[in-house]
Image (cartoon, rainbow, N blue to C red; front, side):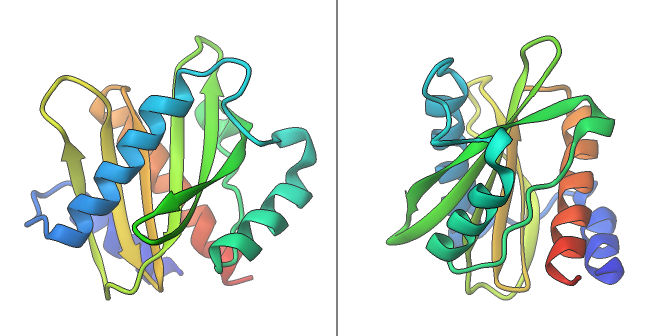
Length: 167
């Protein structure tokens, strides 16, 4: 797990060649974020207050062990999660919010690509996705935060996801 997180950290600051699978993952994650982060009453299907059920339900539907990262030390509380379609498969979307109402989402799906990482933006001034593919997981953290803050959240989420899966 430490090596995986270290590899993400080492590569996240440089520019990466983005391949089609990476683009698809990032684009799906951004599209889901744009739709659901804007929702106030119906952003999630299962609230964070039902965390154990949410993690089990989403893990079973996506086909991966899913552990919702705790981003409270980074100023973000888990709102909850939902199930989404993703490229002929399924994805989990975990939504987080800070005290100022800023929202970020973590998009997680089973991904057969060996590995990859990078940053993706659609160029319209909208949210950015920091994504990584490793250990059968395709993940993207999406938000409209300043670069360093979004990078720190992505690093924290990735470390926790790996440690939760490997425990």
